[in-house]
Image 1 (spheres, rainbow, N blue to C red):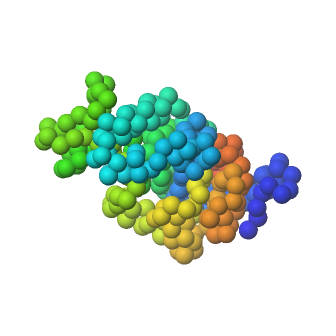
Image 2 (cartoon, helix red, strand yellow; image 1 turned 180 degrees about the vertical axis):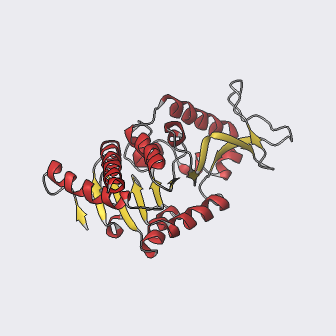
Length: 263
């Protein structure tokens, strides 16, 4: 494994980008796992940064079922603020590069821990959202889907069934959506290369996906601003912002694919 960061950036990046791009260019089934790091590059705060979301609030107050039941209005207003914040942000070059990778590779699926909808806005179509989506809502009792209404106030509205509506995200202590988790592990076990981007590798079960890929003899390419729990598994570790690294990686992948097809 080669790690960037301790040798001159430009020289190292060209060599390691070529290595990673060569792996991707020969892939028949690729997957990517993204975490909060790629969203942070679009200006969305993370949970673990010193200036992150939980630096201001306690998780049990705002991201648990118990907190919602204790003070539905507080939790609702906080999630509405997060929704409006997410809507002011735009996908960054890393998001768009992943959408392009989906178009050029024979098979590519994107697994994300993020709830901000930026991957979809960038054009990614085959998307597995492990933690839900802040743009979606459902009622608390029967999980009936609800469409966002600009007329909603500062208290959670009621579903037609009489239950209160909640954000369509996964709270602490809740199970992740079964179908999405099952497919994420299936895709990880069948891919021949997995990109791991901007994740700490500390949140289960997403943290087990690169291991599932590695156990199935896939190559693992990590892109991150610092070493993570995933780094020891990686065949290539590209250190730096994904918004800077991914566009060059995808462009180089396309060049190598064209060369291979030309021969």
